[in-house]
Image (cartoon, rainbow, N blue to C red):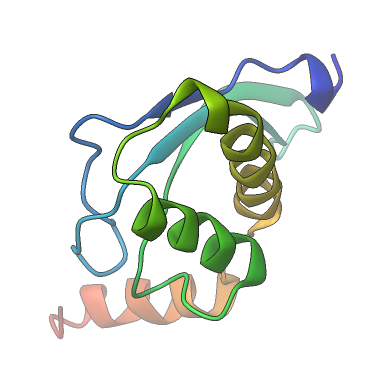
Length: 116
């Protein structure tokens, strides 16, 4: 299955807050995501990304989609194609985002030592 065939679900009504900073955002996206486990087997799953006005600042695709939401308080049929293109570009960036393994290891160690 190619990424073009993936079903992406956008949530515009009451999306969850950003898991990175807790701030509300205008949209979230759920999309198929897979990874390879320690045995080398592909594990299918789902990822969710939230468009955050704080954490995603200065990322061009996110900034363009945020600007669209700032200009258009409602999603009019005449703006669907523009919204689609901007949302697709943002999802491509969100899909490519990887976990910072060093940050994850540091947080794990801080948790083990009781610092978190």
